[in-house]
Amino acid sequence: MREVWEPNNLEVQRVEVRLPGLRHKVKLAHLSDLQTDTIGALHERVRREANAFKPDLVVFTGDMINHPSLAGVAGDWLASFEPAGRKYFVTGNVDGGFATEGLLRRAGFENLNGQRRVIEAAGTQLTLLGVDIWDWKAPGYIARLADGSPRPRLLLSHRPDAALVVGDAVDFVLSGHTHGGQVCLPLWGPIVTLSHVARRIAAGGLHRIGQVQLLVSRGLGWEGHLAPRVRILCRPHLILVELLPPPEHGS
Image (cartoon, rainbow, N blue to C red; front, side, top):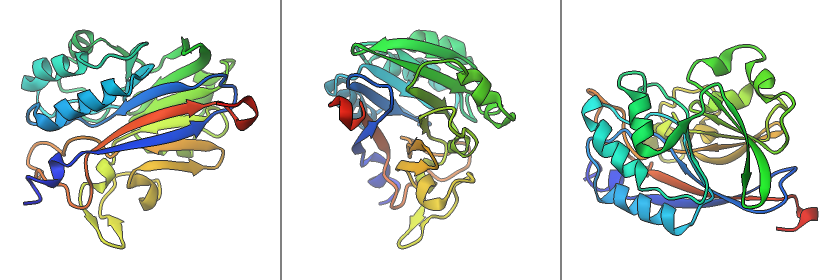
């Protein structure tokens, strides 16, 4: 049955992204849209796969839980991710309905909403930027947030639509939100994406919009409340990313 098999049939996607200004390889695990009714075998596999990758960073691009009662178990699960560096988060649509900051403290994630962090990871420097579910829309907001920071610049935004407005202010956008459509049709793709990016982009994976590279996670869970708990031709998604220097610097 679709509501039993496909929502638990994890796809682990590995991608390589070359970024200007990067001097050494940085490994990053990208999570998004947990939105589950429980923590089960799927989530334990996600944790095992991510930790076995030995990431330097873990990022979560919003929509943690559908109901406040799951804050404790979700926080414990997220705490079990063990990067060499830090863990970062930006809010999505459903994250305002519970004590987000308490969950993040429990999980060891830093809330990057409206923040800029210049960090060292794997012996190289990069800039992390974060926008919440609303501020990315403000004219010039992302450019001001990024101004003067070293490259490469990575932006965490729940909505992939941020990639449509960043111009050359950032090099790489990581997002979620679309669930890959959650229900897709053969030869058509997502029926509904709730995004203004092209359907093929909202379906998930690595894409380029102008000068910026965009990585869209299909997420791990489902829409909450009365929405059906199904995925059709749209498997849950863990993305393991190798950030690499430009070819002239080697890898």
